[in-house]
Length: 449
Image (cartoon, rainbow, N blue to C red; front, side, top):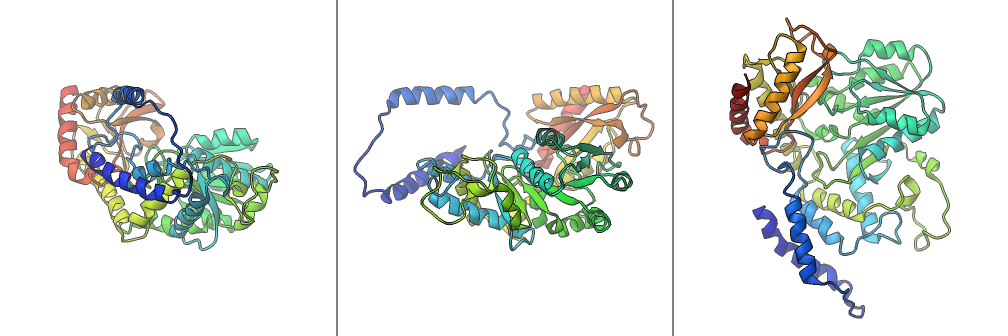
């Protein structure tokens, strides 16, 4: 936290600059009891010690990437104003910055025109995308792979849209033969392709899905909440690269800056290729908007009040680290993927572990070798606990055994699901820490086995 403490001086300087813009107003100072405030804040600090060390390089568990320092500072600075990006009246500068930040996200996918906005996260972003899809294809079925995020089925229940899951192949990707069979039934309105599944980081076969769209009439929604930013990385495998190269051909995209975009939580984004979808958002309000005739963000979003601080933090991050191929941001993403590949190679060459699918992005799934699936699960849980005792924080994932039957020879399938170990190597620093990570995993595994 040393760099955080050093940055407080910069924040103080920025607050002074911000305050200068309001010096015309008479002095107004809210009443705050500083001693009481200090006591409560120190209590908060003690309570927050009850957490896993998410920002540390030895945390390689869930998708917990720390926001960049510039995002934290810009967010804190903006809270002095606390703008609401529902309308220009509530967030003049932050609304304009949101439009600029979202336009930069759209440009990543090659979209010169678009309609989109920030929202609280991937769930609301996907809800809006499927709501629009349902307006285009009323009563038609939404389908997604069995490894797609569970939120899609839940959202369809909320929206009253029929939903069905598609089986996956041995790489945890949407099975094309199953998709073709479903499309032949003629009642499919929207296909959700996942660009980086939450469990394994797998990418659905978008190029083939696009070919099928030319034969059948359906919309394509890309849930790229986790994996979307990897479109900026140039050293992907050819098959993965081909998926990103055609990502701009879908109808809608969801991407979460609070995953790989270095933002605090509460920063998702939904993008539509055709700006005309804005007609579905049209509404009138007699009290919210009166100071500008220009289109405001409240007219193109389902959410009403939204934090302007999220938009400012993203805008500031893009100014410091532009989201472009070949830049520092893209380079750091590449390091995360290299760290995942390096860990995967170490696991593949160790006889204590069972081979699994190679990482497409920066998620690694693996398991200890055992005779039965139930034993694999028990050993995974034991290694998870032993690793934590060595200050190495992993994650666990329950996956259908069908995903591994081609990879794990000689395993007795005595249950339908198996618990594996899983790591998200989302920090660029992980590449330099693989040696220490492997050392701790080695000690933990030896203790269990």
